[in-house]
Length: 71
Image 1 (tube, rainbow, N blue to C red):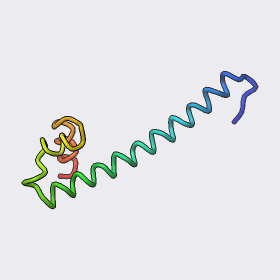
Image 2: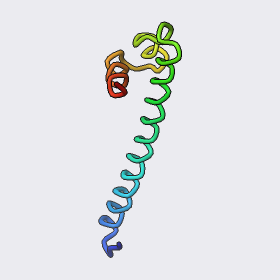
Image 3: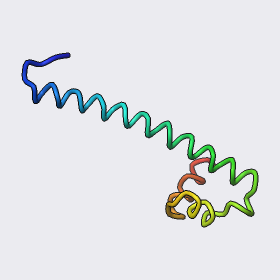
Image 4: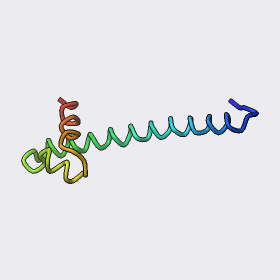
């Protein structure tokens, strides 16, 4: 894939980088989710939605979505 137009070539490069970044972000989210599920399974009393949200710096709603996906 190539182009003699520098702007098109740069756009293609950025498109490729964006796809790679999306794939990496998906892997990070999957690992994060697995750790949240593990914490909840190992110590559900300690790792409430609120405690997890505070520890991760996110909302309780996000934690709830993640936990529900595992069920």
